[in-house]
Length: 150
Length: 150
Length: 81
Length: 81
Image 1 (spheres, rainbow over the protein chains, first blue to last red):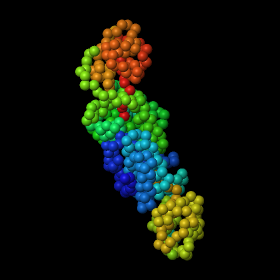
Image 2: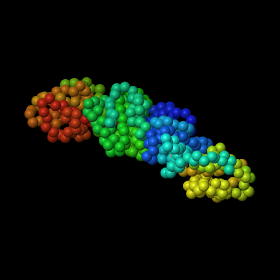
Image 3: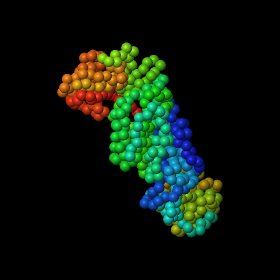
Image 4: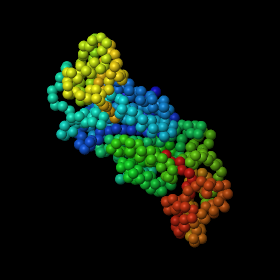
């Protein structure tokens, strides 16, 4: 049974690992995505992640289940939203399996697919402005007043 | 500067991660090899790892450095020796890099190469006997008296 | 019928991040929501160029028919991970 | 010359795990150590079939010449990880 969740809190890598690192598994592959100081040539102060939470939960869980079935592994994924400082983890994928090759492949599949398919967006807050990151594009956050009800 | 060591103690994954997860890296890929309950159809009680320690240290360090240079990543590897119980980690490889693809590739390289080239051996202690694991072979440990000085 | 519209990323600069309701004629599709939003905010040019859409939390194409009370989500290119 | 010999894995069942010293004629190579061990313990048939060798902590082929005081390590197929 796959584990997948969206959280506001710091991700506890060790607790996530415990979910998939039982004695039937000899291999555990973990991917941590964390806040990097530099992005597209700019210095980053911090990040803010937002999500379409209920849909993101569903999509994360499906990705974890697909990986479990395709590779016969155990998967736990957690994605954090809200504000994150440098070096804090935004996402952690942990895959346990009897042998090592499937743990690497399934872990890579989960993070690659998550980026394509899970409705989560990040805003990079930099000293000289803030930017929505949308795929390959960075769109400067508008200072114009927002119409909440157009 | 790569980090690589042989230890008798429990491996602290979090401490090892801190060595390579600075704010210049957005991706951290970790591989944990841990003691599995089943091996070659047998139940395992515990494992004992032995190493040619000084040579193993050198080889581990070279592998970590090779990976750092080839992929432009930061690598920390620790291999434990002595007796290990089920679910305890025998080896941990952690790779930090700006982007995710090199972290996966370098991590996989390190664990694959370690298995080929680092002089470490494991003995599987099972309820019905003990076995030296040598590559693909398992050789039952002899009960014959040993001649220490042949 | 009434439809709830949600959006994220740079679209919240135009349409807010709280979501809002639209009144639409029976038989409307996701495409009609997009057309309406483009009329209200002509600068929101990426709505059809680069977004995907969801109906009630599942991906759906532009010609998906809508029901009263449903939720349409407009999803810019994602950047999770 | 005197040479220290170390071995691991199933070889310790034959030769112990402590290491030991051998007296060899000048000009000996790693191969001469192996031949000597095979004579002393004919059951140790994997010595040349599947082992690798190290001289002073570096991999070395069978025809590597030895020096007085060096250490020869006989390395069965490894199983780290």
